Figure (cartoon, each protein chain N blue to C red):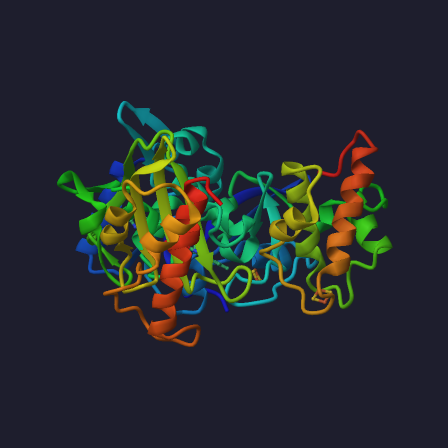
Length: 288
Length: 161
Ligand SMILES: Cc1cc2nc3c(=O)[nH]c(=O)nc-3n(C[C@H](O)[C@H](O)[C@H](O)COP(=O)(O)OP(=O)(O)OC[C@H]3O[C@@H](n4cnc5c(N)ncnc54)[C@H](O)[C@@H]3O)c2cc1C
Ligand code: FES
Ligand code: FES
């Protein structure tokens, strides 16, 4: 199938894009923002959405690329998953975001799909949100009234719903530096290329053979990504050994209410969360 | 209608397209380049893979208007002067296809992989073609073909990309 007809605009600046969004909304017409298109274009093809106007962000150079901003790394919303896997600044200071991006879909989708698009899409099985939450990223949103910053903990509101409102764009993602931390994104899928049944994002700082700091985020264990604070607390001070890590992480799924679907029921998901958190932290700590 | 100018397999084209036209439909229906095929409705199968400014993409998940000013390489642009590209030759010699439906996309993904990683392990080959589904071969001979092409090109300076 092909998408329904729409008018197409490809602005070259964020201001122009926001102006277009405001104009179209004022005229009462339905508008969609096009990022990498790897979720939106399949949806349009299946006619699950049929906007009258599409505003494409691909021609806005300011939304692409990664820069160093002192104690944070700043990632443009239109930076592709493929760029995220390779970008040296991200690998050095926020390795978790890079290794998680490398597990999204396949090479072709990673060449087009974007870091910001995946965050705004907020599919509960998507692989970018839990790492963003685990690393306490700040999401910078721009609208007609200027810019505002929302912490990751407040950004994901529900299935496919975030703090980005109508007429607004996610413009950049600020990640505090986690220089020298190990990272692992551990994903359980039914077949290669399938979406995560459950996945775990882990970053740890090991000092003198023990875990000094830990960050853990869970994918697809609820309608929004979940931060495993209790596991993080239990890990701190533990030796970076298989036994200690296994003990501290096995209850990662406790207290969550994950979905039941054709891939797994809630109880199996809770079991997976414990097992995968152990594996993720072990790998992130460089232990085996 | 929107006017676009795109270089496809080395030839420049200018056409009026509807914004909703997918790149794959532009290639097939406007340019007649039916070597690139459509295998699904969900951007999952990879049969439609082409190179857009050097990167592999699924041409069913890109709008034709988004390719304006870009350069596209399809399976039809690989052979030179009637001589198969080394990757095509390797698929031919290693029985890398059965029905052949996935082959155009498979070969475009394989070429993109070798450009990035000229000497991939079998595991890296399997990851490189993760976005391409084949319902016939069980992948074994596809992996063998790509591996053979990598070895062939490491002994010829021209490379396969
Ligand atoms: C075959 C296949 C397999 C996939 N597998 C996975 C997987 O394993 N894991 C995974 O995480 N993802 C997967 N994806 C989805 C992929 O990661 C997408 O890239 C991502 O979900 C959306 O990013 P995008 O840039 O393509 O956004 P688009 O598809 O362009 O947009 C998605 C939504 O976000 C909005 N949007 C985009 N950018 C912005 C912005 N800057 N500001 C405001 N709104 C914006 C759009 O309006 C739209 O509603 C897969 C996709 C395909 C086709
Ligand atoms: S036709 Fe494009 S991925 Fe299947
Ligand atoms: S050879 Fe038939 S689908 Fe691959």
